[in-house]
Image (cartoon, rainbow, N blue to C red):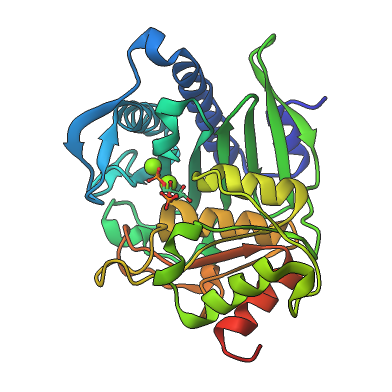
Length: 324
Ligand SMILES: O=P(O)(O)OC[C@H]1O[C@](O)(COP(=O)(O)O)[C@@H](O)[C@@H]1O
Ligand SMILES: [Mg+2]
Ligand SMILES: [Mg+2]
């Protein structure tokens, strides 16, 4: 099985970008080890702090964030990093060619129950002139040069794209290396599986309610087929399932909080996952357009997410537009 660096070289990925991805896989092994240790290393539970998103930070959120920051900023090709857990950006090498945005630990509520969590990353080009201001990060997802995630599950996996399809690597614990286990991931066009937090049903827009209600009617309803539902409560694991066996994943608009109609963050969750899904032949939309086309105005902004199997996403969008 092929190792990470030779695979990247085969794809003619730029050496500086290879170095950034290599740095990310070093972080991944360290975070994977800490997740595996759990209580043995005293890393479970919450801190007394809240992050910039107003959410309680878990000890592992803080630890993973610190590790990624420290290790990435040592890479001379990294100009700056932006994290879900940091208010502003953190500068690195002033003439570094890349910017890295990350969700250090996605699915934090799963940490203490020993369920799946992951790290999501997005690499953007830095502007030609040296410097490090927050505005550099405000680029649409279509500008990404690499994006992916590390899933800390029963197996630790590194999944990414550099614009040449989606590749999956599995961490071989015996040699401590990521080995290529899926060279060209493709999402089936049709599916009978969906993922949504059903407890928010009463807060969705009417179109989304009608779409999900029709899925639940199965063979007895207008869709004329039975659907299965899954919800891991970690986008990284739900998207991994979609990439592996198809499906639709959505965290749509909801009316619970007037000032926070969306939950998922564009730069750390929406964009990297959208690019992966598109590279695997699927669709990724906000409900009003392609996620990758959004021009960000804030590094912490949130967006609606509907992604996965092409035909199912298209059908969902038709319900939202009231044409179904
Ligand atoms: O708590 P809910 O409504 O099930 O939301 C789960 C969603 O929240 C998230 O966990 C947010 O990620 P963080 O753990 O990084 O805050 C997504 O990964 C997931 O899809
Ligand atoms: Mg997250
Ligand atoms: Mg997180």
